[in-house]
Length: 195
Image (cartoon, rainbow, N blue to C red; front, top):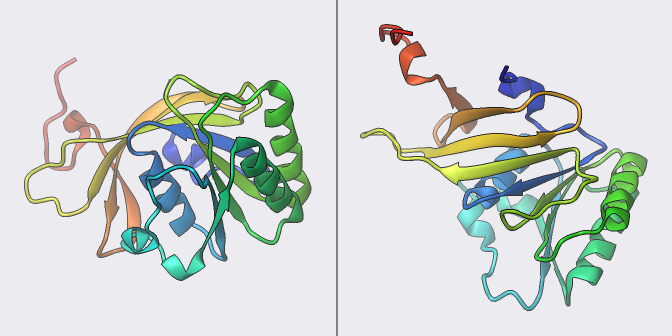
């Protein structure tokens, strides 16, 4: 049984979640667009792939973005934990490059609960913390001809408080909102696929 996307997204507050895959940055940007207030994005300073705030402008106002450059993962986790606990920033996005142990994951969860904030860790595929509330895989999907918006496949691959599911979604730049694309046999105007 597949969950309805609205039961899983936007992500549950006061918890830390994870996303992996080539569409992870887009997932984080769309999550940021669903909220209000500043977004803290914690990166490791040695990473040469820079986050370009203007590149996110299609999705949310880059003036809301605060970028923290930490020397390494230990410092990135410390910054994230303090920001989650403080509660002044409603969304904390943290780029993770090494596996978190259960203690580190649990500390982030407790901080998010204390600050009533949402945490999102961008992780490499195949890695993740046992303490995470949900883990998602986000990847681009081939868009239909004529579509001018971002098409993604989102799959929830771990969910502590619900079912798993997969959705094709499209970010509409004009309407500035997320659309769930129905499966091929269930699109309006199409005949239901024989079963």
